[in-house]
Image 1 (tube, helix red, strand yellow):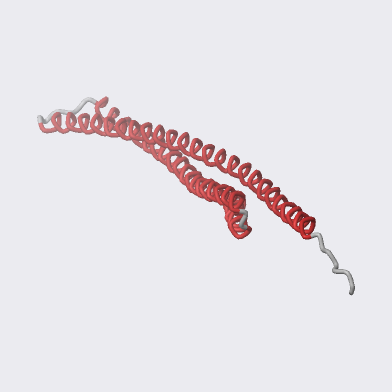
Image 2: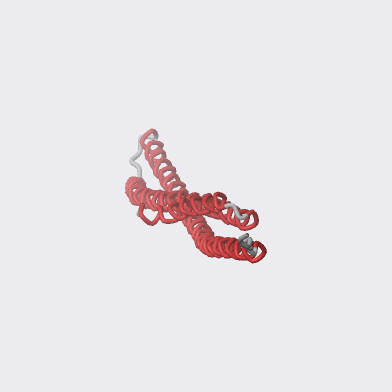
Length: 194
C-alpha cells in the first residue's frame, strides 16, 4: 500500500496569507501615493483659488475707486454747467433790462462750457478704466470658481482614497483616482484659457 502524500496545509495557508498581504500592501502603497499627490494638488488648487479671489477683490476695489472718481468728475461737470447757466441767465437779465451785458459774463459761460468738454473726457476715461478693472475681476472670479470646484473634487477624492484604504476595495480607489484626474483637468483649465 502506497504511503499517503502529506501536504502541509498550514505552511500553504501561511504562504497564501503572505501573498495576500503583499498584494494588499501594494494596494495600500498605491493608495497612499495617489492620496499624497491628490493632497498636493488640493493645496495648489486652494492657493490658486485664494490668490485669484484676492486679485479679483483688489481689482473690484480699483473699479470702485475709478467709479467714485468718475462720479466726482460728473458732479464737477454739472457744477460747471450750472455756473454757465447762471452766467447765461445774468446775460439774459442784462438784455431784458435793455442793457449790454459785461463781456466777462460771455467769456465765463464759454470757459465753463469748454471746461465741461475736458471734464467729460476725464470722466469717460475713468469709466473706461473702471470697466477694464471690472472685466479683469470677473475673469478672475470665473477662474476662482473653477479652482474652488477642483478643491472640492480633490477633497472628495482624498476621502474616497481613505475609504479605499480602510476597506481595501480597489473600485473605491479607482473612483478616487478618477475624481482626482477630473480635478487636475479643472486645475489646468484656466491656464489654457489665457
